[in-house]
Every structure is written in C-alpha cells, then in structure tokens.
Amino acid sequence: MTFTHDSYTIAWICALPIELAAAKIFLDEVHPRLHQPKSDLNVYTLGSIGGHNIVVVCLPAGVYGTTSATAAVAYLKSTYPNIQFALTVGIGGGVPLGKPDIRLGDIVVSKPSDTFGGVIQYDYGKTVGNGHFYHTGSLNKPPPILLKTIAQMESDYMLGKISLCNIMASSLHKEEVQTQFPRPSKDQLFQSTYDHVGNKSDCSACDTSELVDRPERTTEEPQVHYGLIASGNQVMKDARTRDSIAQGRNILCFEMEAAGLMDEIPSLVIRGICDYCDSHKHKEWQGYAAFVAAAYAKALLTLIPIHGKGAVRNGVKEDPHWMVPFRKNPGFVGREGEISKIDGLIQEIHGPLKIAICGLGGVGKTQIALELAYRTREHILDPMYDLCEY
Image (cartoon, rainbow, N blue to C red; front, side, top):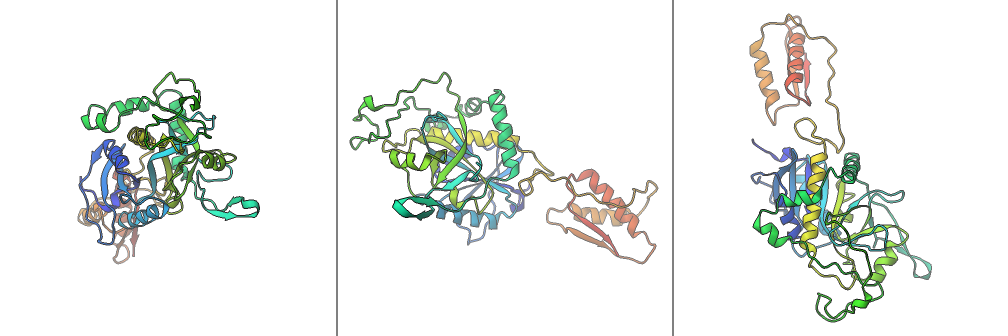
C-alpha cells in the first residue's frame, strides 16, 4: 500500500529519546519515510496502530519546554496537513498529596475540570498584592472524540477488560525492551519538608525515617488517574513549591511540553509517573514510565473509531455526505466508456474533488451522474465528490 502525507491523521509527540523508543515499540506497522520540505526541521517516524496512520515526532534533544513543542507542531501541521489531533506521550512528575494515591509507574491523563481544559500553564499569570501569583488564561481541552474514548477506556479498565501489563508483556520478548524498560522495585516517597542529602541521586544518604508510610499495592497493574496536568518551562524539583501550586487546583502531574501544544493542535496528554517533583528526583523510573505511557496510548488508539478509509476527521465522528435528489434508474445501460473514465478519476488518491459532465440537453448527462453517484456510494465509504452536469 502506498502512503502519502495526506494519509496520516494522528500525531504522537515525544520529548525524550526514551519516549520515542517506547513509541516505536508499540507501532503495529512501520511505514517508509516520506520526503519533507527543507524548512521542516522535524524527524518523523511513520506507522500505524489499530488501523490509524500515525506520525511520531520527537522534540530536539536537550531542548525542552513549551516553545520547542510549539515549533515542532508548526512544522508537523505544514508537512502533514490532515493531522486532526495529537497524543503527547511521555514521562512526568506525580503529585503525591494522598488522593488519588499516585505512585511511580502510574499514569496521569489530562482531563478537563470545571475551570481548566485538562492542562494548566502554571507559570503563566501575574503577581498581585502580598506576592500572590494569580494564574490567568486557559488552554484548550481535548477534542470530543478523545474525551469519549478515554471515558470508554476508563470504564473498560475498571471492568478488567484492558490490562496494560498484558499490553506491555506482548513486547517483552524483545531483548532491548527488557533492558531499556525494566520496572524498578523501589518506590520511595519522602516527606515534603525533607530535602535530599548528598550528591548521589540514589538517596542512599537520606534518612529513611523521613519516608512516607504507604500501604503496599497488591498488584503491579499501573493505576490510571484522570485530571489536571500542570505544564511550564521549569523543571519542578521542590516538594514545597509542588504542593503550593497543586493544592486548591487538584493538579496530579507536572511536565514541560503540553502547554505549548494545547492551543496549537487538539491534544491529549498521557504521562507515566517517574518521580515526585521533589529534590529526590532521579532517572531510575524514566524508562518504565515512558513504556507504560506508550502502552496506554496504544490501548487508547485501538478504541478510537476508524472512519471512512481509516481517517479521523476533525477529531469527531462524521457521517458520510450523501445527497442525491433522484432514485437510481434500474434501466440505465451504455455509456460505460464515459463512466469508466470518470470512475478512474474518482479512484485517484490525488484526483479531483469536483467533476463536471458537459453536453447538450437530453444526451444523458443526468443519468451518467446518477449512475456514478450510486456506484461511488457502493465502493467508497466516505464519498467527498461533487458530480455536476452542465
């Protein structure tokens, strides 16, 4: 099958190489690369998941934050004009304030609240009296098709119909997966008032009496939490600041790219939790967190309906356009040469969207148009053509 730039309707956006590696693992198929303009500085991986054609793009190495994400999306939309929405998939820092009980290796998915669209740019606003920071503005929420699909996903997950452990296990036969994405055994949460000790990242010098006592989970199945995600241009690495921003807004996660995307392209943010946004931040959980976030994204994509030839149009389900004012003529015969020629134009990938049939009155233009319209309806699920007679 031949793919063109117009064949791709969904973007998968990553910020780190480990996130890109996880995305590639879960592609059902990998497609050949396509040419792109010299002005497009992105590097793409093309493939499919669940019948959807996917463009995977990673932000420049070492360049993080909302500005980098905005630029990448601008290039993406120019080169792949039919992209309808994006999944921003990768790692983030969790907010362990008690409820929900967020642990390392869990997943947080952006979901709108009464006030915000699912993502809040926490460093955007103004400082008013007494040094109080007042947040201003809001970002767009995900498109309806994604909100409906995560509702289905949440329901199926509750009923045990979907297991992320099983999805991940299907890829564990690959040696590189076992090496790069292992699940660490240690999940330590320190009191928010206790700072990291020493220069080592493994907390070996930290006082274990400052650990928060939490009950052990009875399953390794990742928990999925839905709510607000805070995004900004700074790495969140202080528990006190984390709590002061999160409290009152019910923020579940911090990250650095989503705020640059939400108003540029309809998006859903999926984050695997790799740390607690405190001074004890380390990279041990990053691989597994990226892996589990990618597994969730794959499961989500398999639930999104396929419309027409596999395209998701405008992020919402659309019924095929069909408006013919006359009934089919069962006695129509002849004109096979003209019909075959026009039918060939319709079948072309980059063929015309409007076709005019010209001729004198009474020579059969209407009958040809009717026959073509009904034939097209039979073998094209989503007809997007105008057949006109003059």
